[in-house]
Length: 99
Image (cartoon, rainbow, N blue to C red; front, side, top):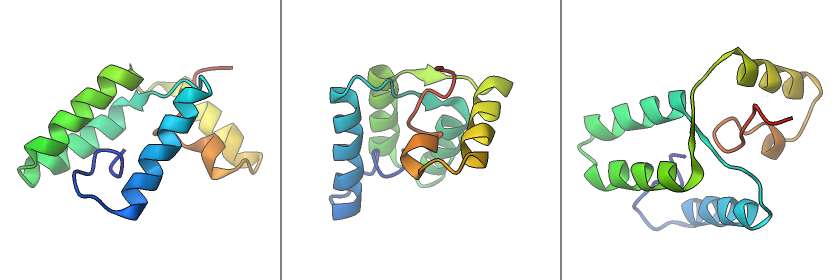
């Protein structure tokens, strides 16, 4: 989420934004976990980055928001234990409560 909400133009951030767009085009449900929102928002406030806060709010409006419960944490543990790829275990970008 940090790269996606990064207001600076750089290749890594652009690749991350394109990755998220491609997932959305494939009808992959993308949600922002509450812990990611909290951590990013805290840093953006610390750096007085209103542009990044606004972008985070915009993306939550598009992607959706999910509270952290045992279910997504357990799903991530199972995926990590199964040696799934980074894309499949991205806790920031995938609704881990989906079965």
